[in-house]
Length: 493
Image 1 (cartoon, rainbow, N blue to C red):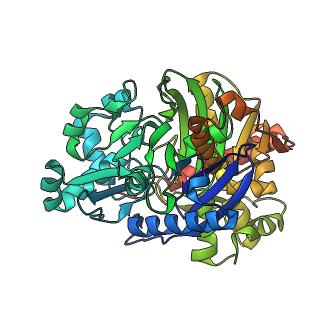
Image 2 (image 1 turned 90 degrees about the vertical axis):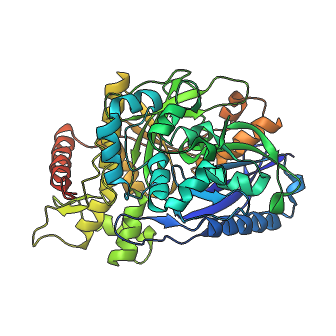
Image 3 (image 1 turned 180 degrees about the horizontal axis):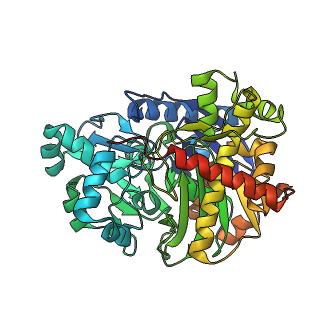
């Protein structure tokens, strides 16, 4: 029996899984790390803590499986994307906390970039709008806010990377980034899969600090430390790994992951498709020696984290799992809508000036209505993404494959099906992000011969079919759109 491992480094926690050649989980371990919130709109992580937690869960999972790293055919990394780390090449010490993908401190800088360089040319090269979401502006902010860093960056003393780069540096000593994560920096040419040096210069980011761009699936190098004895063989951003885990290898295959945020991706084949509806063009994955596969993506900043907010900040529930019972305590939302624009609104609107709004309340409103509104907000946002996807591709889905922690919520999945008017399908393994990274490592190691063999491991667990009337769907959608309008323009500077 062959075994592969995968590090799943997410926004709130890190997990290590061990998978056998049948695609079955053998062992896993998971731990959270701190969310550092210095001021409104700022979100940071401690990169050293992230690495320490990673080492701890790897050791714990290997211990549970009763094996050593040498028993693994290879390991893969999947990671929270866009989160930005800059460190000293000589010491390996970060110069600042990691600036997380949700962070909005670069809003003014992004407005300046848009007005100076124009959003159209940047989107044509990178497939991305100018937005706080992406890594490039975060690097520029760091260099602007500590002048000593710029000189060090230009001389090659500093290294930049997303979290996959940070983990790979610590595990193998190589300064690399895979194509999926590189496609989220606002610095990579989507056609050539290389850094656009002219764009980097215009954005004020020294190319000396950029990592080498490599394929998603292919040997990075032998590991050291806790994984000494095996090799790093795959690196994929979390949503791209979920596509591999969902076996979305054919044009038109679409999945939605419901985690801290929510992310809808559809496979567009070996050529990027530019969006006219507010979506992102991105790399789906690339196997070494083969052309890249591309995707259209819709990104939602706040999904599962809105339930955490209801638990931790508001105290309406004690555990996240209680949200479904709270929402079921009322028959409907009572005309209450929640817009979770804590970091502005991402796709398809891209409005950093939006902020969270809870609207439609009357004396009739109770706890259950608020809980239901928070839960339903994720489904409304996914509906907006699917509408944009239809506008870009001109095709309708017959079903939507879903994964991530929130798919355990049957009420949400049924409401999602009702809003979309199509079946929502939950796979037998919902933790497809980690599984996709493991599949990538296993494909490179020869555990699985091809993506077609991986496809054979995919199975259906539950299916939700629409049961809502067209009129009710239209009424709810109209209410949501009114609520979104009231969230816009809150931030004036």
